[in-house]
Image (cartoon, rainbow, N blue to C red; front, side):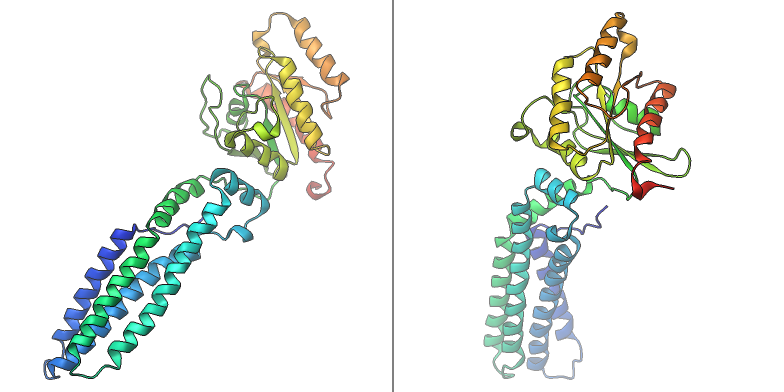
Length: 342
């Protein structure tokens, strides 16, 4: 969702720019042979400084310009960035690149002026100024080597950020391995990773469905465990952020073959943290439960402790008809939201 730039390593930037600077200086000295050698030499050094600074500043300014400003991001992306990257490291790395730009701009002005306004016969002075410029320029770039490397890593993470649309949004939540990703795939046809072990989903996945007038955004979140918020890992926190910032309606999928009481506790915690949330609950894997009395007890308890706005439904997440029935139940909750009335 972000148009992120190429990020050079410090050494590749130095090698590229100094090589190009030398080539341009040589070309400048070779042109207009009727002009005195000393004048052509002076123009060559001017061209060297100009070319090196132009390339370095262009590359580094592109990094600053195209990486998103943390303070201008929507709240969801701000918090997601902080969970996945750490906003302080992010700001520090971009600030270091800006520091390098500022220093090289100042250095260019001084060095170029020293060369430009030198006397024609001051060849040694120009050579010293040119070499000093390259040495200090390389020093500034090397000082941000770690920041450039970190931005390469950050670029990979930012490229994985989900592209959120301004659409009615259903966020799917629940314990690991309860069938959230299977539900999304069955309902929307989205290609999500499915595997029979916990925490398969380690980031947010998105699918869309347009049953009639509106296009709905369906978000699959990483699995949550029944534990305090301060003990949640970065993977789980992504699910919390989706509930906090994106969910118009939440669908909790409950697995009757797992620890039901812990799953109830999780839903109760979410209800406590998001008291105004619209929640519907679906009991998955009902085909694996031979004792139907167990399913009845789950329904009765859910209704008794008032964890959901609507009647809990049973489903098999890989069966389209039962998944669609659950979605239709969740869809009813959207109609009460003024911003999605049609």
